[in-house]
Length: 163
Image (cartoon, rainbow, N blue to C red):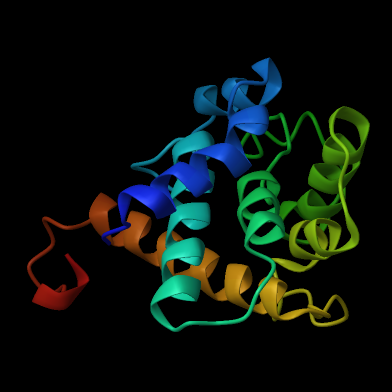
């Protein structure tokens, strides 16, 4: 993934407010998909989403895309312990992330849609309603798979392209 200096500067301008916030920084304490913490995962989803949108010359709200992607997993608990939340995590964490985002930042409709609907199609009734949400949802799946394959990359049967 290669961004130009101008694209990196734009990404930084869109993300600095969030990335400098102490609660967003606290996401680094939580494991996400085995090899990655939640903050690194969220930054990776935002960077890849932005890169794909630029590479494919998609006409998207880039700022909302970046901010929504950064906050899509803004739940502040370890879902593996099962003590800090109710219900099946995969289905409930988008609402928790959105609630946290609204409480701590000014969130627009597209950013809210990205956060709330990023688990689609697993959450079949919560379908993205904007292009930015569809892209972040797809990139989130890609990054999650990549992180999980990295965790088991020593297994001999994994194809070379998955490493």
